[in-house]
Length: 453
Ligand SMILES: Nc1ncnc2c1ncn2[C@@H]1O[C@H](COP(=O)(O)OP(=O)(O)OP(=O)(O)O)[C@@H](O)[C@H]1O
Ligand SMILES: [Mg+2]
Image (cartoon, rainbow, N blue to C red; front, side):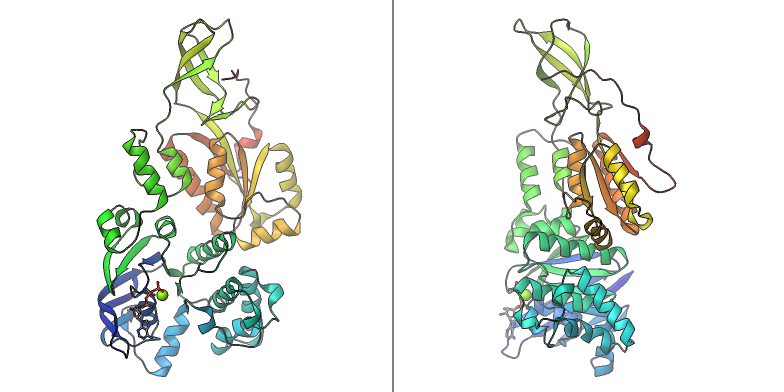
């Protein structure tokens, strides 16, 4: 379903600068969209047109198929449904305190005092600014101001959230947190539109990408399609995303196989052709033709755990005792990822899993789970990019626990299972405290013989 549409849009500033022209676009409901283009390409101007802050000189913008009208009541309705976070937070923030600033939108929507309070508290908690709620916004840092502006829009729960350069001014962990927040909103149905110069972000995060150059859209499509066109990127003054660049280099050296547009580090790792042959030290009793289990998984030794052995056949034994073995990839076992649904939270159960589950790595996704972990002193190894990092750890034979809740549980489980399927590397994935259970914890320890390489 198309939620937002522009037809034949043109906008020129009073000094005659044409900032947007010949612009047609359709945005589907519930998607994550990026507009990418260099400075001055027209992103901010387009965004102001898309929520009615600017009125086009030509063409029209449609919301749910209905053209925008520019009388003050219609504009109020549009802005209730299509929230915008400006590129420059100082254009957005004006109230005497952070709390009042975030409350401005919901109060204007006519919410009751209690509802305004609940929305504001939640939005501030989401962006991690609760403790600054009484500060004057102009005394905050650039990144903190950005968070106030984002909280102000989120508190109104618009159907479409437009964010002009949402990550500028944010430190890397703060940026990851905002992206996770946007994902959470998207997960519950909001359409999210961002502008960015960051091709890595646009490539990794978006469902659909528009390339802007010189006030026009010069390319659009899925990130894999848009970013594989070097000429198009050059025309837009952009570069290829780093993961793609590395992948192409791997490919040029004949080391790649499988999927050709990896977006995440686990996907990139998975494009590496696995080794077929390897030199290993073998004990004297081993003969040519013997079958062995080698305790290594993707370059990591696994001297104790039986979960990550690779079966291999000894092809040749050198007089110095080292042997060439042929690795059999089928049936490789890596570690595993266990997902804990914090909607059924029990601290004692988590403690038991951490104690008995040989968990090497714990991550949390979503504000609720992070807050629970913090409150109960559960040590988190990572709080952003949790799914990818868990996959990487599982590939190295480690077991991970992800704390999350609501729809994020199925989302995480689905993504990791998809990875297992496409990679052919078997590792356990399960939701631990739901009815379907997870057999992993009951798994008995095997007795795989390990050889040191
Ligand atoms: N108020 C204004 N008056 C006149 N020209 C303007 C005004 N604001 C922007 N422009 C011009 O419109 C064009 C598009 O600017 P816009 O801010 O939309 O680009 P952008 O893609 O958001 O750039 P950036 O990446 O730097 O944020 C530029 O040529 C800019 O100089
Ligand atoms: Mg801009």
